[in-house]
Length: 210
Image (cartoon, rainbow, N blue to C red):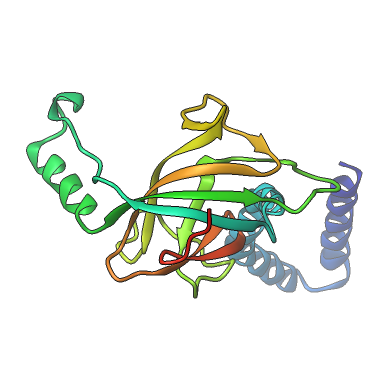
């Protein structure tokens, strides 16, 4: 707050001095230029402020290790027409079936082991995991609806009491063994995990270790 008030004071002083020692039209040009500059500077500042918490959360799985235990084929997800509202048309249902048909479906048995954290976030959310191509970059955030995406994770289970099961806990700490229900584009063999801005754990579907 103190820094913000100091900035306001400096700006007001600059405006006062500008109109006092410079021609009035110079001051007007400077103000108009500043206003136009804000139209592109402000969105950048707001975007950075919005993304800052996600960059901090990314550090939780930055450098995490992944062990792929098993890969098994799975049936694609089904859609029951009775689950849809009256506003959902038959065309919408057909579109969803067509979207699912773009992928081959698997269950991936993986263990994700984060690097021990010394500060910051220690919890991570399996539901926020993505699988992306080996050429993806940290800043290249994928849109889940992008038709070029190679993979989509529709569901996951956590290994507890000797079996994979649903859990009401969204956040976990430390290593977790997961069963990911994922659709992967035909022909894709190599993927890596994304957790917000962190990329880690490249896997190859043909490789698995018990």
